[in-house]
Length: 148
Image 1 (tube, helix red, strand yellow):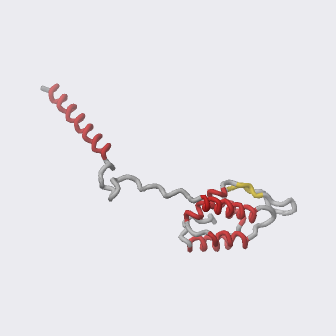
Image 2 (cartoon, one colour):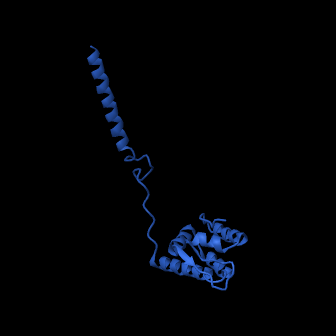
Image 3 (cartoon, rainbow, N blue to C red):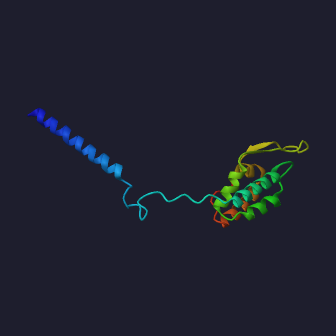
């Protein structure tokens, strides 16, 4: 009798395990996600070639403002003013990639810097400028701000 009880416990456990497995496997296939069968939303459309070109041009203008002796602050502010949204800003950041800005040999106290756009802005700009740029970006709904 004891063996029959053990066998019954094993069968019940296996049955419950199989039921849980099949329930878990089927989860997300129904309509509990609201309207689209529980699937992920479609990805955003790819950027247009015009956007890609604009972002590349802006990233090059950022680089030119940083490269050499000092930073051309009015150029940086003008470029940040051109940003229209978070996705626009992300496009410029991606287009910038990682670059090395070099200081002219006569610039005492300045050194070369390698980094992405946000890190380079942090390296090249003072706290007041970063605060001003972040305020401009925030006013356009941008949430990826320059570290300070």
